[in-house]
View 1 (cartoon, rainbow, N blue to C red):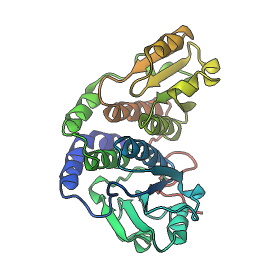
View 2: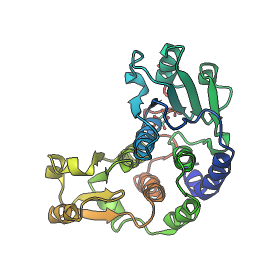
View 3: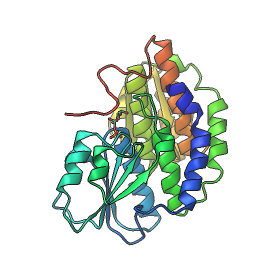
View 4: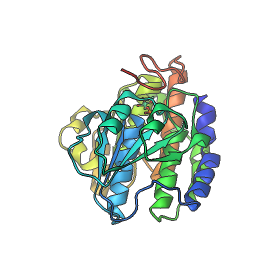
Length: 289
Ligand code: F1P
């Protein structure tokens, strides 16, 4: 399923643009103080969106792992992201939120238990997936959120097509370690890319804010490392990374479209290692405690 779901992203992103044009109720308005919560992939979407929303001047926006959400914090709105709508930490967090706070759920499955706990539901059934590993749901949601923030993202579906057709990084299966770097909103994308490689391919993958990478993790880098940069880092960093012997990969398209290419790497690497990318070891479609 994962390969088909990855390939369907240009179409899903077009549908996200149509949905954004209808201004769906429940997405935060400028000025609201907002917390965005999620687990795993959904947390990384929350991180990317929080950075973009603050950067767009729409108001203070915090991203929390749903398990760490502090109910005593005062927010105008909590946006819970959950493809399945059944993840335990999401249900717990939604049920502890104070009455004066609006609760928005963004989900791929309408009628889920989390829907019962939300005031507003943004339904993204058209991007739901069969694979345990999430690919098109989080990226389609990012397109919706960026459009809702007022960004012109009309070229993104075409960029996703380019990312689907571009070669994977040179020597892609040969690395011992895969590192993804970002800055600002692309830190969430780097985290998500690393999670894909871990989940689907059971490979050693890490992610850092780009500048933080210099403060220790770079000690691990050598010729057996691929370091993949999402978005822009100071040019001097590229030289520092190359000096370790690591192979450097940079984005040729919008970082969200570049994530499509990293998803392809994860799934191809899984196949190359003889693994089923749809059914990662020790993981289920929604994690319930
Ligand atoms: C999130 C989650 C991810 C995990 C995997 C299965 O669930 O558990 O953390 O990486 O993709 O889904 P959800 O709350 O978004 O359904």
